[in-house]
Image (tube, rainbow, N blue to C red; front, side, top):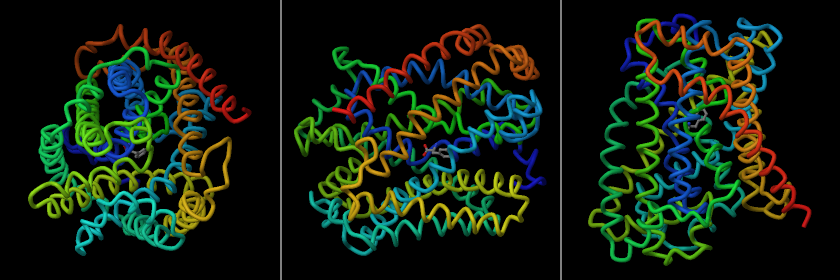
Length: 452
Ligand code: PHE
C-alpha cells in the first residue's frame, strides 16, 4: 500500500469494511463448509466459535493494535517494537506468498463456474462428473487460474483497489442477503433436516486434535490472521476509532458469512448424497459439486447461481488483492524494486507455484507430498503449520517480551478495554500452551499417516 493511503480509512465503518473485505472470501464460502462437513459438523462449528471468541479475538486485537501503534506493516512493526524479533514479521510474510498462488487456483474455479452460468451451462455443472471433468484437464483450469490472478495483478498494478472496494461495499450486503436466501432454501429441501442437525448439534465422539487444528487453521485463514495482514490494516487505522468494537464487528461479519455458507452447503449434501462419509469428506470440491445441484432445483436457479458466483468472485478478489498487495509491498521493500517490477515478479512467481496446484488435480495427481496433492500440501503448510507457529510466536512476543500492557494501552486510547482480562489470559497462557499441543499432535499425525 502506498503512503498516501495511511490514515485513509475514514472512521470506523471504513476500517471495518476494509478489513472485512480482506477477511471475507473463499475462506468463508468455500473452505469453511468443506472443513465443517469433513470434521464432524456441529463439533467443528462449536470448536470454531469457541476459538473465534478467544484466540481470534485476542490475536486480531493484538495485530491491529501493534499495527496502529507502530504505523508499520508486519516486518517493520516487529522490528520497531524489538529489533531481535523482526523474524516473526518475516515468517508472517511468508504465509501470503504461499497462499496467493493456490488461492488464485480456486478463484479460477469460481470464475469458470460464473462463465458456465453466464453461457447457459448451469445444468451441466449440476452433474456429478462435471467438476472432476473440469479440474482434471490440463489447460482449462490453468486458463481460468491465469484469468483470476491476471485480474488481481492488474488491479494491484494500476492501484485501482479503491474502486473495487467501493463496489464490494455494495456487493457485500447483497452477498449476505443472497446467502440467507440460499441457506433458507437449502434447509427447506426435503431431507435437509438431517444435515441441519449434523451441522448444528455437536457430536462429541467426533472430537479430536485434528478437529481443533483444522478449526484453528481455518480461523487464522478466514480472519486473515497470523500473516501480518491485520497488522498492515491496523497501521492505517485512525487513533480515534474504537479498536475493540471494530474487532468484534469484523469477527461477527466473518463468522456470520461462514456459518451461512455451511448452511447452504451441508444440508444439501444430505439431500443429494444422503450425507455419506465420502460425500461429506469431499474436501475442496464440495461447494462446486453441491451448490449447482441446489440451483438446479430452484425456480430461476440459473440466475440466482449466476449472481451468487459473481458475488463470490468479488469476495475472492478483494481477498486476493489484499494478499497480492502484501506480497508486492514485501518485494518492494526487500529487493528495493519499484512497484511495477514487483507486481510482475509476484505475478510470475505465483503463476509458477499455482501451476503446481492446478496440475496436481490433473496430470500430476499421482505426485504426492506427505500423502497430499500440491494444493492440499500448500494449504496444510500455510494453515496448519506456519500460521500456528506465527500465532504462537506473536503470543509469546506480546505476552512476555513487550508485555500485554503495550497492546492494552493502545486499545484503551478509545475508552475501556472490556475484555482485557480475557485478552491477557489468552495471549499469555491459554493460546501458547494450546497451540503447542495441537501443533505437535497434528503434525505427528500427518507424518504418521504418511509413514504407514
Ligand atoms: N481471509 C480470506 C478468506 O477468507 C483469505 C485471505 C487470507 C485473504 C489472507 C487475505 C489474506 O478468503
